[in-house]
Length: 136
Image 1 (tube, rainbow, N blue to C red):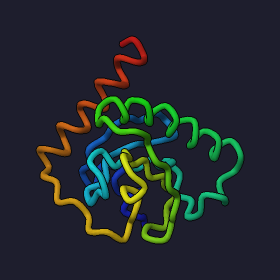
Image 2 (image 1 turned 120 degrees about the vertical axis):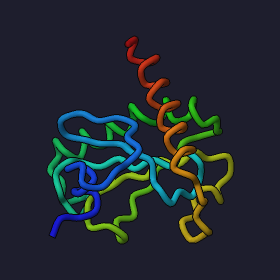
Image 3 (image 1 turned 90 degrees about the vertical axis):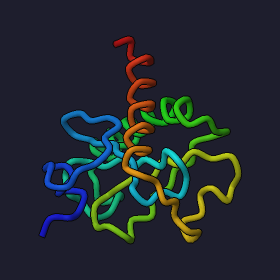
Image 4 (image 1 turned 60 degrees about the vertical axis):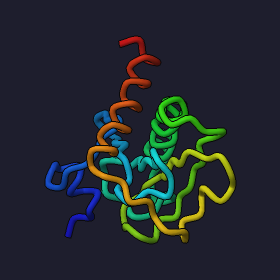
């Protein structure tokens, strides 16, 4: 049975996409720990990060590295934190979380309730920053 992320990739479940190429997808978490909380995934369903071959692993991290500065400009913060937990969805994913304090990367705290409209606005700001960076 496909994971929820595979269903997002297939377009069966809507998402607030931030960036996409032939191998990877970045989209906003609908239950974020901070505004702008972005998930970066391979379009290949592999459960565990360290089961990715080297090409996919480095590609995923380079894709996330491209998203992080745009995220930091769109959602002003001191840093963009990175977390890979991998227990909640059996599909490799990297969390990019805007941080102003260590507690911002606490996944046990209550998640933010963010409207679809607000998610769409945040995703657009990040996409705009990506376009500005790439010179589009």
